[in-house]
Amino acid sequence: MSDLLALDVAILPPAHVRDRAIELSAALPAKDFEGLRLDEAHLPHVTLTQQFVRAADLERIFDRLDVVLPQQPPLTLEATGGGKTLASTVWMAIARSDALTGLHERLMDALREFEHAFGGASAFAEGDARAADIAWVSGYRLKSSFLSFAPHITLGHANEPPRIEPFTFVATDVAACHLGRFCTCRRVLRKWTLAPRP
Image (cartoon, rainbow, N blue to C red; front, side, top):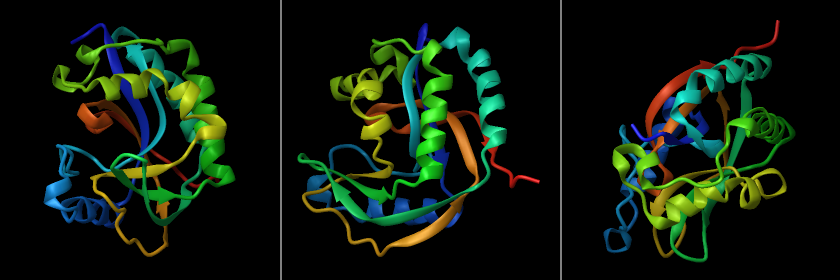
């Protein structure tokens, strides 16, 4: 294992949302395929934090998450429709809410001391990453967090985003995942279940 690891702390959606995301990914036009399809080895997820960390720090990171996550009750999330970058990445958009944004910010603060600004392909699962993946993880704090936090479930690539009727769901599972190519969650390192407050 590389000294550095590309880590994603993410919400793993419930089964019906996971299955819907996998179906939407599989239905994207074959002509637009760039190598990403969601499945049981490329898990649908909503990123809360993303960073390069030392593999040797994982247990300390898990200890920190053991403090933060039990304070968070289950999250009611709203999928608002499909979205697309200026290029061709498409996703299921998730509405920002005070609870979701608050958890994101607490996790960003809690894990800051473990963060390394730069990593390489060897930090990703199977040592497989594009330059864009490395740049995304390296730049997550500056470009994609706090006021720029845009929660979503990446689906793949297409010229147009898929049609998704808005719906709500309750999320209870948060996981620390090892990222792979396309910043997919390839391996669950540890999982936590959000429990209602007594």
